[in-house]
Length: 262
Image (cartoon, rainbow, N blue to C red; front, side):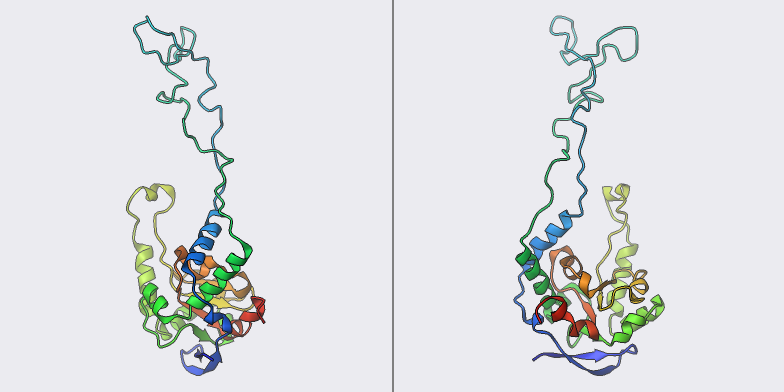
């Protein structure tokens, strides 16, 4: 039996709670990574090109003997597009040899039992101190962190931020803040990816619609998710297990029931 301390909103230890048997699940980084990629590809919207793009023209090659290259040229004379090279892949507005196709299958499917094992394994990884400290700048005596159910009623971002600092996560929050302020180097700035977001603590609460979900939105790196909506995307960002997770006491006690183990 493994127990971890329970903290109140002042960061004070007020009791202990026994960790469910899920935290003794074998950690499978390979299954976690595969499930993460499967859920990541499920977000990709299929997109492609018109199969006739660049081919809607009367262009036809003149052949040899005209002193010009034999690329297809628009028919006619007396207007700007006449005799202009078209249709070929190296011409302006021409066809593309390997254009994206909307029927390409980008979704990587994963078996139901594998997906379930990945979630259980990712949950177990949140209870491994060495894995958590490899991802985050924290020095904790025990993981995961468990807070009383009063955490769900925290509605102010300032209140939640002060609680995280009292729990010893101040340096981790500063790391996420610095990463968010940094401008990405490269082409991604032109494509809506100006900043990279560091992943900090994850808050798991029991009841959907709790105010803490809104309170966590404006803290860089902090995510909050209801227990029934938890996934590998939350527990192992990037497919790497060991995310620092803060559980409410009710979520810990209901974990096996929600996961269908009890």
